[in-house]
Image (cartoon, rainbow, N blue to C red; front, side, top):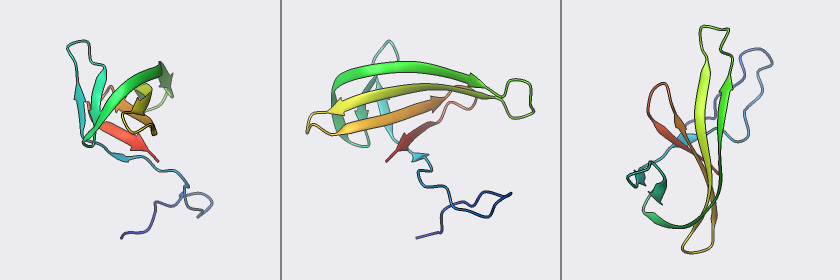
Length: 88
């Protein structure tokens, strides 16, 4: 297992770095399956647009979901690159 990324200024590790996720969506773009876990319920969704004034703007759509097994799952889609990521 590789070490977690370090903050380049302080040298500290990030505690909850997102990791790539395999996400299936419905026709509206709502996640229906995350890494093989079926989604039972969408709790909420929100949009983050930040750092628009920099060379690395942040545009993400977050989803808080509940799996069929009852686990809480938070995923986001990078709206610039199109990739999906999952928080622990």
